[in-house]
Length: 260
Image (cartoon, rainbow, N blue to C red; front, top):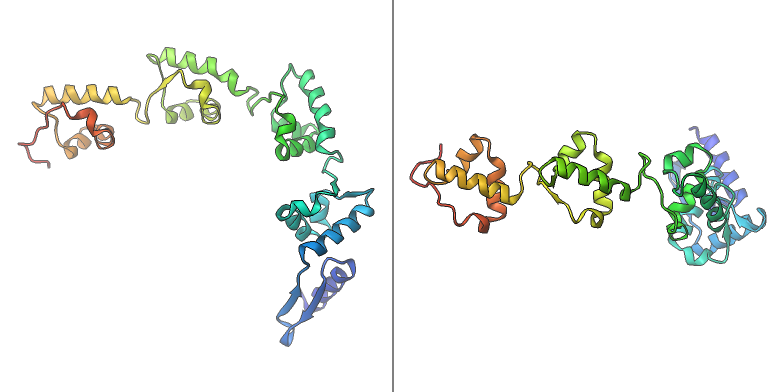
Protein backbone atom coordinates (compact mmCIF):
# COMPACT_ATOMS: atom_id res chain seq x y z
CA UNK A 1 0.00 0.00 0.00
CA UNK A 2 1.39 3.40 -0.99
CA UNK A 3 1.95 6.10 1.63
CA UNK A 4 -0.72 8.38 0.15
CA UNK A 5 -3.52 5.82 0.33
CA UNK A 6 -2.39 4.80 3.81
CA UNK A 7 -2.66 8.41 4.98
CA UNK A 8 -6.11 8.74 3.45
CA UNK A 9 -7.33 5.62 5.28
CA UNK A 10 -5.93 6.87 8.59
CA UNK A 11 -7.51 10.30 8.18
CA UNK A 12 -10.86 8.66 7.43
CA UNK A 13 -10.55 6.48 10.53
CA UNK A 14 -9.88 9.57 12.67
CA UNK A 15 -12.91 11.36 11.20
CA UNK A 16 -15.14 8.37 11.89
CA UNK A 17 -13.88 8.12 15.45
CA UNK A 18 -12.17 4.75 15.09
CA UNK A 19 -8.77 6.29 15.95
CA UNK A 20 -8.44 8.86 18.67
CA UNK A 21 -5.15 10.32 17.50
CA UNK A 22 -2.44 9.52 14.97
CA UNK A 23 1.06 10.89 14.53
CA UNK A 24 3.66 10.07 11.89
CA UNK A 25 7.14 9.32 13.17
CA UNK A 26 10.47 10.11 11.55
CA UNK A 27 10.70 9.61 7.76
CA UNK A 28 7.01 8.63 7.88
CA UNK A 29 7.97 5.01 8.50
CA UNK A 30 7.00 4.68 12.14
CA UNK A 31 3.75 5.75 13.69
CA UNK A 32 2.38 6.23 17.17
CA UNK A 33 -1.30 5.52 17.83
CA UNK A 34 -2.89 6.57 21.09
CA UNK A 35 -5.43 3.85 21.74
CA UNK A 36 -8.78 4.59 23.29
CA UNK A 37 -9.32 3.52 26.87
CA UNK A 38 -12.13 1.03 27.64
CA UNK A 39 -14.21 3.90 29.03
CA UNK A 40 -13.78 5.80 25.77
CA UNK A 41 -14.88 2.74 23.81
CA UNK A 42 -18.05 2.70 25.89
CA UNK A 43 -18.85 6.17 24.54
CA UNK A 44 -18.26 4.90 20.99
CA UNK A 45 -20.57 1.91 21.63
CA UNK A 46 -23.26 4.20 23.04
CA UNK A 47 -23.01 6.45 19.97
CA UNK A 48 -23.36 3.45 17.63
CA UNK A 49 -26.32 2.17 19.66
CA UNK A 50 -28.12 5.52 19.39
CA UNK A 51 -27.70 5.37 15.62
CA UNK A 52 -28.98 1.77 15.49
CA UNK A 53 -32.32 1.74 17.39
CA UNK A 54 -30.60 1.63 20.81
CA UNK A 55 -28.71 -1.57 19.99
CA UNK A 56 -24.97 -1.99 19.40
CA UNK A 57 -24.54 -3.46 15.90
CA UNK A 58 -23.63 -7.14 15.61
CA UNK A 59 -20.02 -8.31 15.86
CA UNK A 60 -19.96 -9.06 12.14
CA UNK A 61 -21.03 -5.52 11.30
CA UNK A 62 -18.45 -4.05 13.69
CA UNK A 63 -15.68 -6.14 12.15
CA UNK A 64 -16.66 -5.22 8.61
CA UNK A 65 -17.02 -1.52 9.36
CA UNK A 66 -13.74 -0.79 11.10
CA UNK A 67 -14.53 -1.47 14.77
CA UNK A 68 -12.67 -4.74 15.50
CA UNK A 69 -11.05 -3.17 18.55
CA UNK A 70 -14.50 -2.39 20.00
CA UNK A 71 -15.41 -6.09 19.66
CA UNK A 72 -12.26 -7.03 21.55
CA UNK A 73 -12.85 -4.50 24.34
CA UNK A 74 -16.45 -5.68 24.72
CA UNK A 75 -15.20 -9.24 25.19
CA UNK A 76 -12.52 -8.17 27.68
CA UNK A 77 -14.71 -5.80 29.72
CA UNK A 78 -18.31 -7.05 29.33
CA UNK A 79 -19.36 -5.35 32.58
CA UNK A 80 -18.72 -1.91 31.05
CA UNK A 81 -21.23 -2.63 28.27
CA UNK A 82 -23.85 -4.49 30.28
CA UNK A 83 -26.23 -1.52 30.06
CA UNK A 84 -26.27 -1.77 26.26
CA UNK A 85 -28.32 -4.18 24.19
CA UNK A 86 -26.43 -5.83 21.36
CA UNK A 87 -27.87 -6.76 18.01
CA UNK A 88 -27.08 -10.31 16.94
CA UNK A 89 -26.21 -11.39 13.43
CA UNK A 90 -29.73 -12.66 12.91
CA UNK A 91 -31.25 -9.46 14.30
CA UNK A 92 -32.68 -11.20 17.40
CA UNK A 93 -31.58 -11.29 21.03
CA UNK A 94 -30.77 -14.71 22.56
CA UNK A 95 -34.11 -14.65 24.39
CA UNK A 96 -35.93 -14.03 21.10
CA UNK A 97 -34.22 -17.07 19.56
CA UNK A 98 -35.59 -19.42 22.27
CA UNK A 99 -39.17 -19.65 20.87
CA UNK A 100 -37.70 -20.09 17.38
CA UNK A 101 -35.59 -23.00 18.67
CA UNK A 102 -38.63 -24.52 20.41
CA UNK A 103 -40.63 -24.31 17.18
CA UNK A 104 -37.86 -26.04 15.18
CA UNK A 105 -37.51 -28.56 18.02
CA UNK A 106 -41.19 -29.58 17.86
CA UNK A 107 -41.16 -29.75 14.04
CA UNK A 108 -38.15 -32.09 14.09
CA UNK A 109 -39.48 -34.87 16.33
CA UNK A 110 -38.64 -33.26 19.68
CA UNK A 111 -34.96 -32.76 18.78
CA UNK A 112 -33.09 -29.72 17.52
CA UNK A 113 -31.27 -30.40 14.24
CA UNK A 114 -27.47 -30.41 14.44
CA UNK A 115 -25.55 -27.15 14.02
CA UNK A 116 -24.53 -27.54 10.38
CA UNK A 117 -28.13 -28.12 9.32
CA UNK A 118 -29.26 -25.02 11.21
CA UNK A 119 -26.60 -22.87 9.53
CA UNK A 120 -27.43 -24.18 6.04
CA UNK A 121 -31.15 -23.62 6.54
CA UNK A 122 -31.15 -19.99 7.65
CA UNK A 123 -30.67 -20.40 11.41
CA UNK A 124 -27.06 -19.21 11.77
CA UNK A 125 -28.26 -16.57 14.26
CA UNK A 126 -29.78 -19.34 16.38
CA UNK A 127 -26.46 -21.24 16.30
CA UNK A 128 -24.60 -18.13 17.49
CA UNK A 129 -27.09 -17.56 20.31
CA UNK A 130 -26.82 -21.22 21.41
CA UNK A 131 -23.02 -21.04 21.52
CA UNK A 132 -22.98 -17.82 23.55
CA UNK A 133 -25.92 -18.60 25.87
CA UNK A 134 -26.28 -22.42 26.11
CA UNK A 135 -28.18 -22.11 29.40
CA UNK A 136 -31.19 -20.65 27.54
CA UNK A 137 -31.46 -23.79 25.39
CA UNK A 138 -30.52 -26.47 27.95
CA UNK A 139 -34.11 -27.78 27.99
CA UNK A 140 -33.87 -28.73 24.30
CA UNK A 141 -32.09 -31.89 23.12
CA UNK A 142 -30.00 -31.49 19.99
CA UNK A 143 -28.88 -33.98 17.37
CA UNK A 144 -25.18 -34.34 16.69
CA UNK A 145 -23.69 -34.08 13.20
CA UNK A 146 -24.96 -37.52 12.14
CA UNK A 147 -28.48 -36.89 13.39
CA UNK A 148 -28.23 -38.66 16.75
CA UNK A 149 -27.79 -37.38 20.28
CA UNK A 150 -25.32 -39.13 22.70
CA UNK A 151 -28.22 -41.00 24.38
CA UNK A 152 -29.03 -42.61 21.03
CA UNK A 153 -25.50 -44.05 20.83
CA UNK A 154 -25.84 -46.15 24.00
CA UNK A 155 -27.82 -48.90 22.26
CA UNK A 156 -25.24 -48.98 19.46
CA UNK A 157 -22.42 -49.29 22.01
CA UNK A 158 -24.22 -52.11 23.84
CA UNK A 159 -24.67 -53.99 20.56
CA UNK A 160 -20.97 -53.65 19.70
CA UNK A 161 -19.95 -54.81 23.18
CA UNK A 162 -22.24 -57.84 22.88
CA UNK A 163 -20.68 -58.75 19.51
CA UNK A 164 -17.16 -58.33 20.95
CA UNK A 165 -17.29 -60.63 23.94
CA UNK A 166 -18.87 -58.17 26.36
CA UNK A 167 -16.36 -55.36 25.81
CA UNK A 168 -16.42 -52.32 23.58
CA UNK A 169 -13.61 -52.24 21.00
CA UNK A 170 -10.81 -49.79 21.78
CA UNK A 171 -10.99 -46.20 20.55
CA UNK A 172 -8.74 -46.54 17.49
CA UNK A 173 -10.83 -49.46 16.23
CA UNK A 174 -14.00 -47.40 16.56
CA UNK A 175 -12.46 -44.55 14.55
CA UNK A 176 -11.12 -46.87 11.84
CA UNK A 177 -14.39 -48.76 11.42
CA UNK A 178 -16.92 -45.97 11.01
CA UNK A 179 -17.86 -45.38 14.64
CA UNK A 180 -16.26 -41.94 15.09
CA UNK A 181 -19.57 -40.44 16.29
CA UNK A 182 -19.86 -43.13 18.96
CA UNK A 183 -16.30 -42.39 20.10
CA UNK A 184 -17.16 -38.67 20.25
CA UNK A 185 -20.32 -39.35 22.25
CA UNK A 186 -18.31 -41.45 24.72
CA UNK A 187 -15.85 -38.60 25.21
CA UNK A 188 -18.61 -36.01 25.69
CA UNK A 189 -20.91 -38.11 27.91
CA UNK A 190 -18.81 -40.85 29.56
CA UNK A 191 -21.42 -41.40 32.29
CA UNK A 192 -23.84 -42.83 29.70
CA UNK A 193 -21.35 -45.62 28.88
CA UNK A 194 -19.94 -46.28 32.37
CA UNK A 195 -21.76 -49.64 32.56
CA UNK A 196 -19.74 -50.94 29.58
CA UNK A 197 -16.18 -52.24 29.71
CA UNK A 198 -13.85 -51.20 26.92
CA UNK A 199 -10.69 -52.75 25.52
CA UNK A 200 -7.48 -50.77 25.81
CA UNK A 201 -5.60 -49.33 22.82
CA UNK A 202 -4.22 -52.65 21.63
CA UNK A 203 -7.43 -54.59 22.00
CA UNK A 204 -6.71 -56.32 25.32
CA UNK A 205 -7.63 -55.32 28.86
CA UNK A 206 -5.21 -55.61 31.78
CA UNK A 207 -6.70 -58.99 32.64
CA UNK A 208 -6.22 -60.10 29.05
CA UNK A 209 -2.52 -59.19 29.08
CA UNK A 210 -2.01 -60.95 32.43
CA UNK A 211 -3.43 -64.10 30.85
CA UNK A 212 -1.06 -63.70 27.87
CA UNK A 213 1.89 -63.22 30.23
CA UNK A 214 0.97 -66.37 32.20
CA UNK A 215 0.74 -68.41 29.00
CA UNK A 216 4.12 -67.12 27.79
CA UNK A 217 5.74 -67.87 31.14
CA UNK A 218 4.42 -71.42 31.08
CA UNK A 219 5.53 -71.90 27.48
CA UNK A 220 9.06 -70.49 27.97
CA UNK A 221 9.67 -71.60 31.55
CA UNK A 222 9.47 -67.98 32.67
CA UNK A 223 8.37 -64.69 31.12
CA UNK A 224 10.92 -63.50 28.50
CA UNK A 225 12.60 -60.13 28.85
CA UNK A 226 11.24 -56.94 27.32
CA UNK A 227 13.31 -57.00 24.11
CA UNK A 228 12.23 -60.56 23.30
CA UNK A 229 8.60 -59.69 24.00
CA UNK A 230 8.78 -56.71 21.63
CA UNK A 231 10.37 -58.81 18.88
CA UNK A 232 7.64 -61.41 19.23
CA UNK A 233 4.88 -58.79 18.83
CA UNK A 234 4.04 -58.29 22.50
CA UNK A 235 5.06 -54.65 22.91
CA UNK A 236 1.61 -54.02 24.41
CA UNK A 237 2.46 -56.49 27.19
CA UNK A 238 5.69 -54.61 27.90
CA UNK A 239 3.74 -51.35 28.28
CA UNK A 240 1.22 -52.97 30.61
CA UNK A 241 3.97 -54.46 32.79
CA UNK A 242 5.55 -51.00 33.17
CA UNK A 243 2.19 -49.38 33.87
CA UNK A 244 0.80 -52.06 36.23
CA UNK A 245 3.80 -53.97 37.63
CA UNK A 246 1.81 -55.23 40.62
CA UNK A 247 -0.50 -57.23 38.36
CA UNK A 248 2.45 -59.33 37.06
CA UNK A 249 4.47 -59.94 40.26
CA UNK A 250 3.21 -63.53 40.53
CA UNK A 251 4.63 -64.45 37.12
CA UNK A 252 8.21 -65.83 37.15
CA UNK A 253 10.69 -64.09 34.88
CA UNK A 254 13.16 -65.82 32.59
CA UNK A 255 16.47 -64.19 33.52
CA UNK A 256 18.99 -66.89 32.58
CA UNK A 257 18.75 -66.15 28.86
CA UNK A 258 20.38 -62.88 27.74
CA UNK A 259 18.21 -60.47 25.70
CA UNK A 260 19.42 -60.14 22.14
